[in-house]
Image 1 (tube, rainbow, N blue to C red):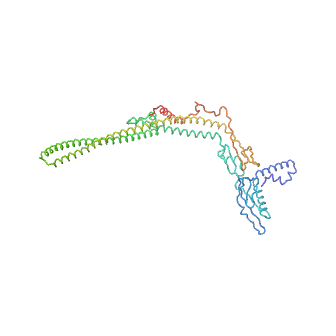
Image 2: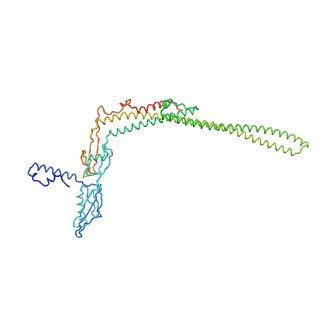
Length: 472
């Protein structure tokens, strides 16, 4: 390990330093500092360190360099601080520099393998054990160590310092955006529900047109309101035409059945006349047969004809009953269609009114939350401006040799060692009379809320009307 020029001069013992006592004292002090600097820069192994071994042996008898390929590999220092190697066994690695570990491995191989001299062992750290960072940083957690790492660099690796004001301001800004979006969605849903309610009321009253409320008519030039009204008109026309088509089909069926009934009743009258004529003729023939003036077969033929006419009349009478039954069934179907339509409309109207009432409650809550967020956000920004010079407090928790840990105050330039835990804390700002008090009921924002009011005011007016409206 190289020392600084001042340290080298001190170690060489220059004549100039020896002549002057003060210079000698300074040189001794500088030497002590350089030695401490060299020791501080020397990396000591510990658990989770991964090292690569390169072991070679000079065999003079064969004039070759023999490579220990079985040991030329990567090994990890265990949790107990030992390095387990083939042939050499377990070797204490924790607390040793890579060079010292190489010497220890060479000596162990010399003893275990009965060598004349220890082989040359090179130890290279390929992966340092991690360090940890916690507290007010963007991404706390475990990170890989690299030589020369300072506290400020460690904080940068973790994403930088994250202040409470940043957290709160970002959260409030997100809440304001979310609140405005929620209010816009609630306003749009309220418009659709009011248009649907007007359509259902028109269907329930069997009106020819929809009478939309003033809350919508005042904003009919708005594209979303106009679209909602137009869609409900189309639905109203389609449902009205569909019901009218079904009822017209049933009425047409009734007209056809009425005509069929009239025809059947006419047939019954003809059958009655035929029966009367056949009976009259049969009475005359029967009289002649009794006097022996006519043959009996003619009487039998007339009786057969009378039975046939009566059978036909009975079939026509059955058809009349069937036609009247179909007419009654059509009337019942028409009545059921109207009742079912009114029931569905009434149920939909109740559900729509309930949804309007729910939106009214949600809108009141959303407007209040938005108001609170927009009141608090400017104050947090002002507080962050007043306290932007606050410096973070750094602390390093370092494992000790006895298994415990030592906590020391640190600066941004202080070096970080493997296994260290860097704690970052942002001190709370000092609050004066102009601090951040909690908002109280009835307090208004110092800044106007034109965008929130423009979104929430129409909805609030509509909600009051919806709450005051009747539930069908």
